[in-house]
Length: 108
Image 1 (cartoon, rainbow, N blue to C red):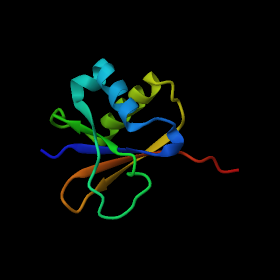
Image 2 (image 1 turned 45 degrees about the horizontal axis):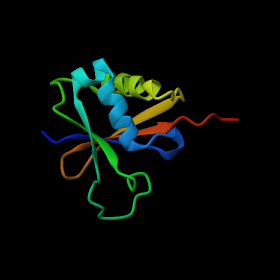
Image 3 (image 1 turned 90 degrees about the vertical axis):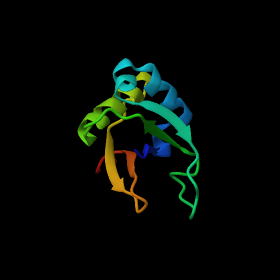
């Protein structure tokens, strides 16, 4: 099974390496999957992916995006990040999945 990649928007204020540590230190998250830091191959420049991404490997069977979203929020909260986020799932052309975690912008 392909790892599930997680791209974290810079405005979240967390490096992928720190997210991986927070994920693996959170019991509910660690039970669902192991997180690892990876540097994805760059076929084109993408500022969101330039710093690397977190990847979930050995994902528990049947985890849906809503459950993963809640676990991502737990891992972020463990690092003190409590910003409102939205998580967008992208099916990659090579068959993998990418979850993009972005800060929700308030309309004013």
